[in-house]
Length: 138
Image 1: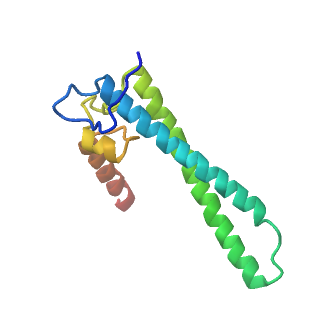
Image 2: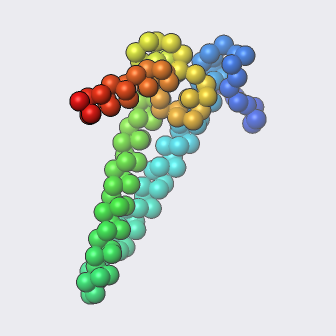
């Protein structure tokens, strides 16, 4: 079943949660984000290949290494994000997208719009963060 979204469509709490329109909205949002990350990753890869020549000056070389390290960390973060986006797209296909992995309650449209890869409701996320803080500080 193909769903065509109106150009100005925004999910609304007045609709049935995760109806076909909302699913298509988030599918498009996730695919667009994924494409953007892949384009940036290719640009980073091209930039790293172009700047891989050795700099004769030690300060320039150190600066280039620091920049390269930052680009590699950014690329690694993007790779992990793409994995989470792929997981979210799979959840849309199986019908579990938008529901908390812990409570199975709806995550909420505002949270999903801000963080479309969210797997926990705000309450469950806050509970996790409190537990992490207790373990870290304890």
